[in-house]
Amino acid sequence: LIINAIEALNDKNGSNKTSISKYIESKYGDLPAGHSTLLSHHLNIMKESGELVFWKNNYMKADPNAPPRRGRGRPPKPKVPLPPGMLLSSARPRGRPPKNPNAPLRFPKPYGSGKPRGRPRKMARPEGGIAASSTTMMSASVRPRGRPPKVKTSAFTEVSVGH
Image (tube, rainbow, N blue to C red; front, side, top):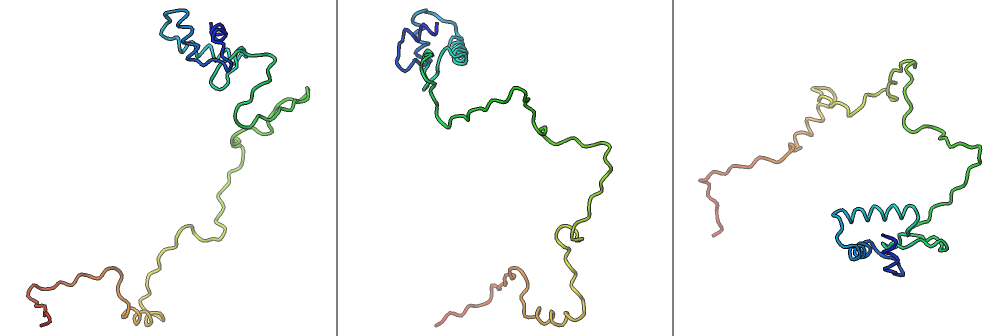
């Protein structure tokens, strides 16, 4: 059916699926509900077997004398045939190798520098000592952190306006 439709339509660039479907419907009349899926299935089978060539969304009969057409993109690399005695085996299987149940237990190594991980703890401020005298002098002139509190003005204060 499909090859007859392609031959009857006789397009130079081949026939697309809808034109093949319309031709079959006009020639054979009422078709079952799953006609379009059946047509797609059979077109794919014929394309894979080599009976039809799919080129630019069109199907055409395979010409044995025609050179193979290239699609878009880079062509695949030619495969080098292996000598007859060689078997394909990967050097190493994929994935992580299984653990050896007979292996001795390993304890984790201490950290290289001997220091604990993470941010160091805050040191408490010294109460007295050498640095106490210099810090108390500096803290008197340094403002505290954050936004200063709002100054509350009383409702009875008069604002003098220049007369």
